[in-house]
Image 1: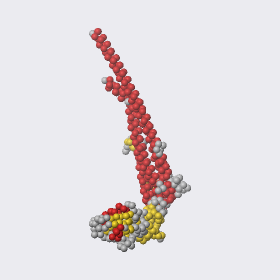
Image 2: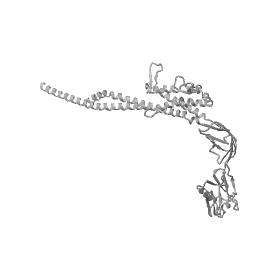
Image 3: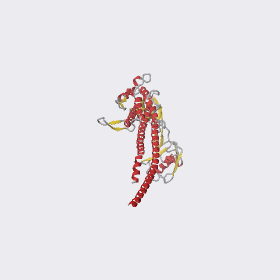
Image 4: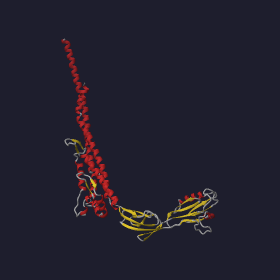
Length: 440
């Protein structure tokens, strides 16, 4: 069976290719492991950026003793302070109404025109109160300031869109239509016959200082970095203080991301022994890869840095001093004392910020530089390691292609040899048969 013999011989000679294919599978698993670690480091890097960001440490929280009177928000330009606020009156929107009509849908039996804020409103015979409302709202698109019209029961209500002490300007026209509708006083005096809400501005005091505004909300011109929203008359105390809750959350997110990355790095490099310890059960795919091992130990060394008194405040020169440290021998972090962290942020804010963000010695700032180094495209540690693996796979692929071409040549050679051999055997057998026939 020539084919079976050739295939058996070729299968033996395919062993180097099989080993190379197995090597490629292993390298692809290593590449996948590095990609997974890269994802974890990327998440860690984003949490480090947030924790070391200037904006994170310049956020402020605003609280009010009476949110129904006034509330507020602050940006990074605010300062810690307390403000006593008294609201005398809120800004209002000017609002006027017509006289009550018999119906909203029947003919008003009126015609003529009048102007609102410079735009003419025309009414024709047969128009209803709803038609007048719609005509005002259509013309309002060109007004400055704009108004809006609605109907309550059978009364036409016209409201200024802007708060403040600026009244709507309504002037009568043909057939004194505004007077006929009961919007303006009869007799041509021009006064409002049915003023529902007078135009007025906000009047309040902040720490005894008068505040006057044309609006009630979004007021950012009174306190630097603080936006005020006035809601009702009354008194309240507004406290502006550092937003330490956001910082504590950023610390926890960093701790969680750090532990996740380090746990994966350990899984990828650890050697697991059996329960009795006499045999190896499992080996991490990146076991023996010095780059992963270096990430683990370099990360731990950076996080557990201890600076001298001359570099940072001696009472706050390690993460341990604010309640954050590693758990035993494992490369894991924990906030072991939330009270210690909260107290440090409340009473030693600048020292804690220096510990995190100091340009030369800030622990998280240094760690951020390290994660930058790990993640930099092309030349970063992870990118270089992945490139090396890709190159190794490509090299093995090229060797496989070369060996497969050699096998094709070898297969052709073997078939030719066997063909020659079979021809020789056939010739010998033929000669033997001839001799036998002569002798016999």
